[in-house]
Amino acid sequence: MKKLIDIFNKYRCKINKYWFAFIVFFIITFFIGDSTLQNRYVYDLKINQLEKDIELYRKQKEENLEKLKALHSDNESLEKFAREQFQMTKPDEELFIITE
Image (cartoon, rainbow, N blue to C red; front, side, top):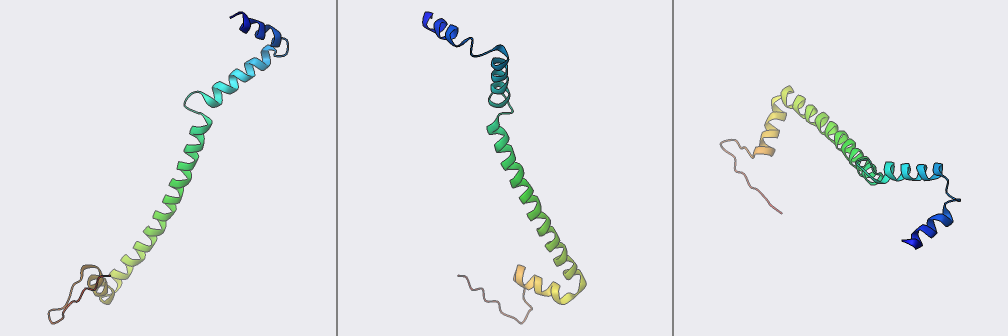
């Protein structure tokens, strides 16, 4: 304990109370609590990933709306879609499924 007091007394004149208060404030603000630098970095990464996901879903939505318009516009595209997606056939046709 005496050794600690000696070290404190030795460096006390070099550290004034304003610097000490600033250092304590800095540590509390950026390294202790809910808003640490690591948490901010992780939150920024999550935000960037979610923004990318939003853009991807917007593109998918636009593509699906275009497909829907094409399906509503004519019967040939509706028949093509039914044949490709649901493997539907006409009564006199045979269906062969080739898997890789």
